[in-house]
Length: 528
Picture (cartoon, one colour):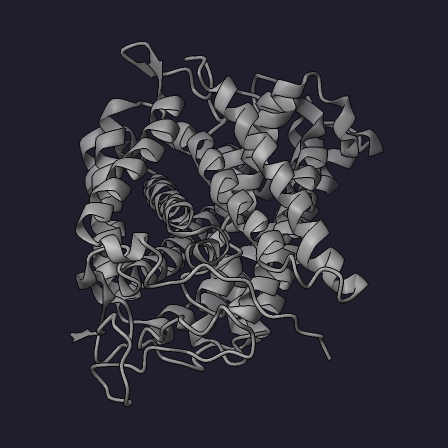
């Protein structure tokens, strides 16, 4: 293993990478190289990794039911509404990446805009959101693993193993261990399997949508609906609370596109390629989500019985219920395979943002220096990856025995975390570039107006969700000592971040005094 010295160095060796990266913009010159493998990913590869991290098939099977439960037939409208702030924030990420291409992304950029404490909490929000979604991915992969085995063997007993808590948790931990091992081997191993898995997901979704719409239009299905343009009207949602709850779920469905930016130090054309890849991934995702939402709604309706998307017995795993009715026994297995592939592929790539954020935080002395270790062969953040895998396993195991509805509760809590660190990053963009906003109309909107709007939208969802989740009935309705599970997960983890930050401040005061990564504004630059 190679330990990257977090202090600025001179020279260029294998074990101590040149630390300071020069930039034509002021305020970026104190960022440090991490020793990662450069030029490992191109535009297509970066976009594929972003899509894979989001895991569209996994997101859909986990979120279609809860979203319908909140907003009914307005589900497509809420997906569009969730896409808007994500798109606006994507512009912020793209512009910040051009100025400061650093794998710490939200952490690094927010430190430079607002200082070390806000930046540390923003980085913590990203790290803990990733650990939550990793645990959720592993849980879904485990469920579909046993469902697929049950389908292939024709044995209900095998399929029922998913409901055995001990068997489920142990299998889940095995998936996490395998994904950690693959991610440990670096970007080359990570991207190698993603093209096939992402292609499989999108192809199966296309077949599912085509068959669902065709059968729905036959008029022979109980509960099926005719398409209506009113489904795209967000103002038709019954209440603002329902809208924000649905929006929080929708925002969760887009989470992960920023992985394209997290691998910026390993991407060819690190200043421009990651931002373009993120926008490409976002467009593919919104198209897939809208088509699947409309097709599923037309086929199954939004009722609370049978195949209805609002059925509470199938709400956490809609595709498990719709696979055979929509695609038949033979092709239905493909949907099981697609969900398993989606969760497994995302489980692997989702280690990228958490490991690289921890790497950056450690390099800048915001976390213990041991996490800055780079593997000499794979050029990956080895110890940070292993730590993320261990934290994910512990979190899921503990939550599985606290909440019987761990998948649903963690999805609701995840929406809070995503809004937290995305909104701070968006505000950081507008503030960081505040002196450039008068340079041109482009700078005004892409560096100021769009990021600010995106940040305000996400901050509003964060605040409303925080108020609503105080009710123990929020989410699955499960609680611990009268405290709702969603509130316990979301607020508890943010408070844990504050405690850890204070502990690190005592251990590494230099970072928190602003001596390592400086707070700065770039000099005025006129774009070509």
